[in-house]
Length: 267
Image (cartoon, rainbow, N blue to C red; front, side, top):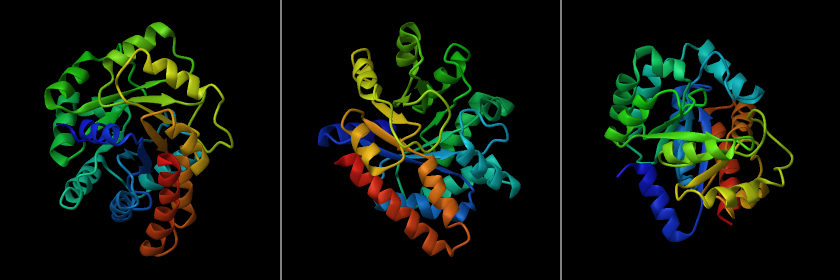
């Protein structure tokens, strides 16, 4: 069984939501990325969303855009990221889903990309610039490999497309809580809980919520209704804050912040 499915089944039995921190691979370097993933796991994170830096932001706000830029300036390549994941697998079985541009997947072919990702130890992909209608091959290849392609639903998604997306999404559904790009928000929109409730009426696939989720209180609110809580920009902001500090201090400080978010999400 894929690690993502196994984790959601385990959490369903415990009646707890998954906490899913997002970090950018290679920001500030891959040694730190690996150390942060291991630290997040110790702090109670359930699944890691690992951003593969890309030059043209898709759904990313300024905080994640800046982290991608910092990683790319240092020459970060997909092959190096996969090597890091492969090395990490000697120490951890935490599920990892990578956010990647479809351009990166398309360049060498989706079958080749998924085979390399599986071999390295990734469990799935989120591809924000891939409409579900556009490439059946990638969903079929993923299904054959027990690899997950996680799809997005936004507040503006029509009812007809929601049904199509819920049928296509593998592993979990990524519900975007706000209309717009990623980023730290002071408030989660009031309609999020109702929208999660409505989605649960048309699918049994776990629903995880991201974009704008920034504080332990936000995580607590989302964790009461959704199957997973995703936090990205607020964590990247902490990484940036301590980026010039020694590795141990950066990992400890960011880990403490993630620990607070985990406690919020799980009540």
